[in-house]
Image 1: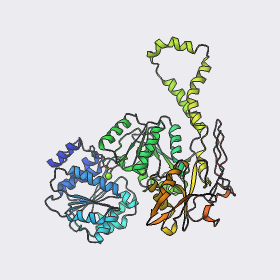
Image 2: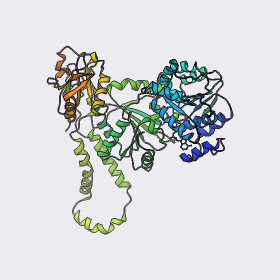
Image 3: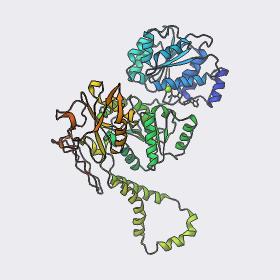
Image 4: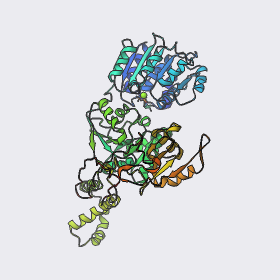
Length: 588
Ligand code: ADP
Ligand code: MG
């Protein structure tokens, strides 16, 4: 194994490497860095997520640019704002002993004039998302006519996000004789195409197995109502007592919230995301590696650093925005020759994403039922039986045995087994006996007020440029609630409806007690006649005019109740003509 010095890196970079605590180069760094340092060449470098590709192009670029010059010499295109910021930060720490280095991040959703001002100061390296980059070139705010190095980082994800045209446009403003370095975790046809179009006889490097859907991973999905996501997650955990898993959420906030709820509910869980300090992240990773944490709730970006081999389950609590990211997620399990399961908790509106993912991974998903409470009790009992069987007797208890035996005198072996198992069974039974069947919740048309949720009327709608998604976002941000806490958003022209759990009712009513949007009074009322009705009408103020496009609860399914009995009955959803779906069956 080579050292960083042997790869040909200069002293100031070696110093930074020591500061950061990197000891040896990763495979992709060992193979890529010497080539990029020695020659001016194009390169295609394929390696799994989390293998250190940023440093593989970052160090050579830093060593090769003229630091005295203020001309932009290096451009790095990367798919998302988060990655842009992450790469910028990494490059700044790699180059911290390079006086005068200026790396600028360019991405959408932030002030373009501020970014232009930073560029004006002279940035040797620009890290950009394609959309904003193209925009700024078009406005003459950025000049890339003198760049010598262009990196296409996470090329597969950029193409998946539809940046092909933007990339083409951007590169048309760059010199022909620059070097292009392409980095990717996967090599779908589109990436091969881009390599062919933009590169001249590139050196090709592949490290280990790229993360294509590995043979060892099976893919499952669980169809539930969006607001039952968390309950479904708990059941999946309870049904797999030895679970050692990464649970993926889309945002830092959801990540934090889900982890907190799990901890509150007694699971060995923790969150890992970008708002934690490096120190906190290291601690979490240490507890995960030593199995003190069974469920690590993570954002996609934070999960990039996870290098643990024995993960049994990847749980997609929410699907990623870009479906290619699914490959990276599921690639966290089924490593080192072990088998793994990638589970997706999915709501009906996201079902088509499953199809798109199947195309990418070229494997099919199995639709599974969220286990019933009884199945979970059964699993837990067998788990207990096996752990009793496998437990080594601790002889420290010997002195107490005579007294214990005295207490339990008169019970037969059978009776004792029943009692021991009842301890565990009763715990789960009590929790699950009143829980509903989560699978039947799909297509549940009880859009009105029910025991646990409240439907509201709000006097803004399509006329104010809202659709159900933007209104949902608006409400959840305003109320500071999570992704699934505002649901059944139904936007009409001049008004809309939405639901929250009953527990959020005071919050909603307080916030809208005196609320103005662009100077206009916004009022929210509890939708009076929005109570459950057969046929799933949202009722309320729509005045029976039928449902707009925003209606996502139109079709109704009545799953028929599965009984809380030994073997749970597998159900099939059957459409019921008249929509009796409002009657959600409860167990027991
Ligand atoms: P990739 O782009 O391949 O997904 P990254 O470049 O984001 O991976 O690196 C993943 C993590 O590994 C980062 O936190 C980075 O700081 C760290 N890292 C990179 N190279 C090394 C190394 N040689 N030794 C230790 N950690 C490293
Ligand atoms: Mg990367």
